[in-house]
Length: 479
Image 1 (cartoon, rainbow, N blue to C red):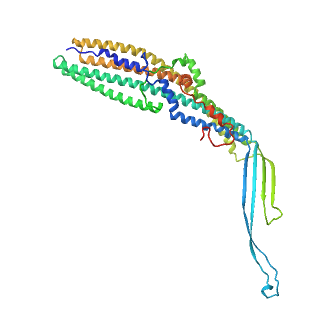
Image 2 (image 1 turned 135 degrees about the vertical axis):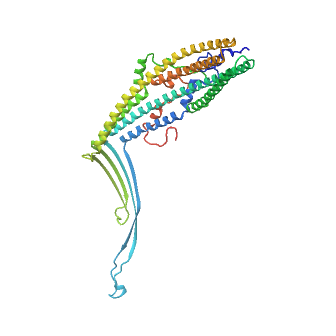
Image 3 (image 1 turned 30 degrees about the horizontal axis):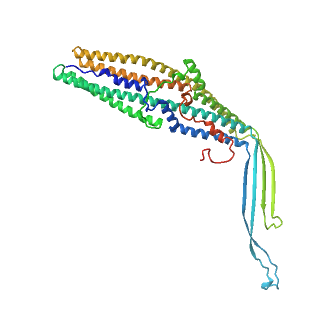
């Protein structure tokens, strides 16, 4: 009895290849990789939280600038002064009579008092602490922007990975579904041939075993597909639709490994943020050293008081004071010296961390470059493997039809073709993800580089909105 051939399995291969970016046509209604990245850039809560943290960091600059400005305080004192007074009244009659004895009458006297004070204080010199705090706050803003850029970079890489993982797992699920269909047909044919005496019970059992294994692989593929959909929803922020092929971004990365390493050591946000951290730590040393310098403060005070009886001749008084205070710290217990030494050690730590970050991004760049090269080679190898496995399966089926091959040979050839297609799907996914990883390692992965159709978040807008604000509790967005 002849075995029917399922057309060399080209339908399943076409699905797998198309999902991994090898198809010639893109579905018009499909979600695209750039579109998914744009959605993540807008919707992801991690990046929105980091933007809020960046806006909070911006407020450090006006806080530091407040040290240049005067402080004005007003005080109102109002109350009453209650006095009980006892007076001695001389006698008016003969001694021994009631009118001849001294009297001691008592009375409550209540006086209202009011005083108004206004004091303005201006720091003229404090060891350059205000200037250094301002420069430190500006460096913290710059470091915060690099941290925000790092968050955006990691999010885009995470979103691209989630997109390609779902593409891969969709293709693998389709492959395993097709494989189960093929194995079911193989089992049916084996049973038919067993009924006419062409094969033994062993052949039927082998087909049943391979079908059970195929169903197990299908269940695992379904589980992984569900997981990938959940990750996609978490990262991108929307439910996935029909995904279009994802394209690599090799053209946006340097052409050589050496150039990639140089760029990563200079432009990777981990490195730039660490370099700005060194500046922040160096300014903290200067701020702490400012505690050893004198402090000069100018003050202007005005007071107006109202004082009714018991001083009836002084109903209102006005007092103006202008004075300067110079404070020279001779010795403060030694704490300020320990603080300076501590900040110097922190500065040294930040410099070491900067060197470590440069070495780390170099390693990441080299690893991503190697993974990209390996993925490209794997695609070529697995494409050849798929073609060879298809040819081998067709030959084994023809030979099995004339009795030169066993059912097990057909099952093994079918499994080898499935493995080859799975390897091709995985290699296609790895190639795209590795290209994004290399671009991220060089610090160039951004919405601008990818030309995504989304409004780019500009952290400088909020900074300029709040930098020179003297009063007001509302944020620029109206809160």
